[in-house]
Amino acid sequence: MFQSLNRLNEDAILGVMARYRADPSPLKVDLGVGVFRDANGDTPVLDCVRRAERAVIDAQTTKAYVAPAGRAEFNELVAGLVLGPAHPALLDRRTVAVQAPGGCGALRVGAELIRTASRAASVHVSDPTWGNHVPLLGSSGFELRRYPYYDATAHRLTFDAMIDHLERAPAGDVVLIHACCHNPTGADLDAAQWDAVLEVLHRRRLVPFLDLAYQGFGGDLEADAAAVRLVAGGVPECLIAVSFSKNLGLYRERVGALLAVCENEERAAAVKSHVLQVARSIYSMPPDHGAAIAALILADADLRRTWLGELSAMRDRIRDMRALLARHLRQLRGDDAFGFLERQRGMFSLLGAPPDAVERLRVEHHVYMTADSRMNLAGVLPGNAAYLAGAICRVMS
Ligand SMILES: Cc1ncc(COP(=O)(O)O)c(C=O)c1O
Image (cartoon, protein in one colour):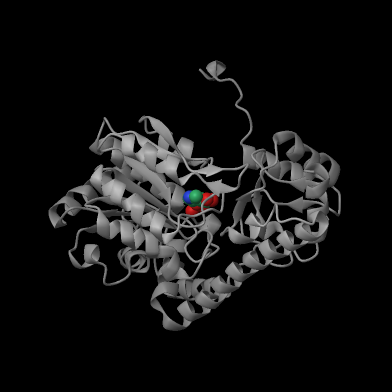
């Protein structure tokens, strides 16, 4: 049977990781894989997580199954964190919240739910978007279409073209939008643009699917949830994929949730039954350990305070490194061609380098990023920023 399978090309990010590991140079710079790094280049376990994890282990009396929906208290806390505790969709009891294995699990379950609900719907993703959106959503069998979002050469949003595209999308189609800290561009819609997008979504009866993987990395938790809250309050139905991989540093524990805001309580009950059936058919039940940790941190005032401090330290470090790299580039070039790095938000920006320049960065300067020139700015360190700026200047004159 397996004779029919040809070997696939290696995954773009995993390939960059492997080459970085194999490079013996002390100068090497890793801007590839999407994890936060502290000033030493490490991805530490947060203090709030360490403390919550000990408490979870001490209190645990069984490893028996939890449920296809995961932990009830986790789901309730996540819905409150994302939508705000007094959001009309919560008060009207028309929100479904189901724990999922990371943001990827939430996106995958959401995709299957869309497919179950509507055979005709296409899903529209931004151009460019996070590479994994394509297999996560596309493998459910619907058509994936791309809406113009960002011009990587001019380093700015192509907002008018995005609106034009949405104006032409058939009613009932789904539009995936990054809620904050767009991956890979770092370019987010501003408040007026979100208002304009919401108006089109509502009028054209499009269904938003918001991907919230970086809440707290762009602004604080409230600011980064503002667009989600606006959209969830302005359309009859929407989906939200939530990830705690980055903001709690729980990457390998696979902690996330799928939220569905529905027209009324009865619809919400029907949607929930289908979400659970999808979960049963893929992984049966989500892993519990990380969700137990996250729930404790969200519920306990002291742990939550510690988390907020650690989250703002992560956010500040990335902002500082954006500013530092932009400053070095400004000094070396005498212009502001890379000033966009400082204005964009979250972990990623597109350098805007062609693939041959990305290759030269790797081969000649030991600087690693994906071929589309996506940089993880958390990989910039106080000690490598000047070197990195020099390398960028040499390959991009
Ligand atoms: C845009 C986006 N969505 C979702 C995810 C999902 O992350 P995870 O499945 O690790 O929680 C990521 C992770 O990199 C991401 O960048």
